[in-house]
Image (cartoon, rainbow, N blue to C red):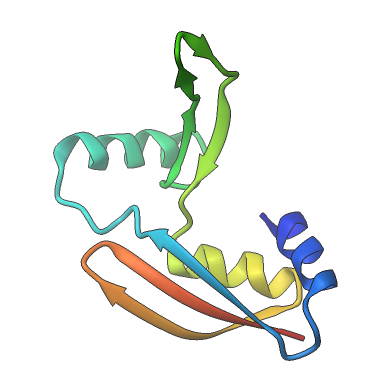
Length: 102
């Protein structure tokens, strides 16, 4: 994610804004989700890291990593790429982040 955020920063003016919508993976009481988070932690991975692939009309794509970062993880990744989180709007498990470029 830091590499993608760095690329985005190159096309945004200084003090430009990026709006990011994410799901907080920890905003759950589902035992299956909680067990998945624990398996990830045990493996040294972020709790919101999963694998996904798309299927459309019988064609199945390759597996790819999907990371739903927690707020501290997003803060660290965005800071490393030259962004600052200026605002967070939470509704249920959904999070809307406003990032400002350096």
